[in-house]
Image (cartoon, rainbow, N blue to C red; front, top):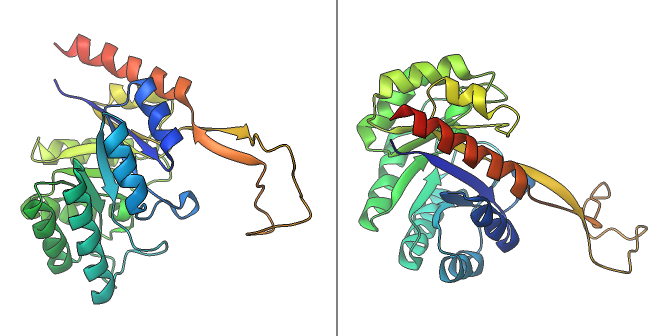
Length: 253
């Protein structure tokens, strides 16, 4: 039985930590505070050139809602093409309309672009904002989406397990249901016991900057942002998730 432990990464250091911990794939993003936007060309290129791991590139031109204009759609198509040319394994995106339904025409446009570049397609947690999850799942299947990342429309995947199990049953292998949202080593067994075999985690820890001179009275960004601290992937916690997954998959055979 196949399984996935995908780790959400924002820096090269994150990617290296995730790879060391045994991740099977990374989701490469920018702007952690917004939940992820499209990373830079340079970061995508460098990661793909230096770290041997599958990379799914976030395609999201801004933070905020998932109602994207025609201009934003054009930007997303260009970013998908860049990810394909650089050698990414997949891309991650989602577009809703004003009523909170999947914007099927725009999704089809983006999926067609991705498939032209032989990219796997993940619909991200825009799904968790969708008005009707069951209809949206059916539309994603019909569009040929390969993977769905969702917390079961709850703040965390553990809270969303009832819907996740429904989606898993309905999808019946037509696309992969990937549970994400607060997935940690402390709750992975509960999620795996529900039958989930594809996991997305952003488990992090805080580390101190190695800078020896700090000027706390001078802020270059938000005044509440502490430049002396950095969030990085929690390698130990990701490794515990990977090991739990391996044990569970072994017992499935």
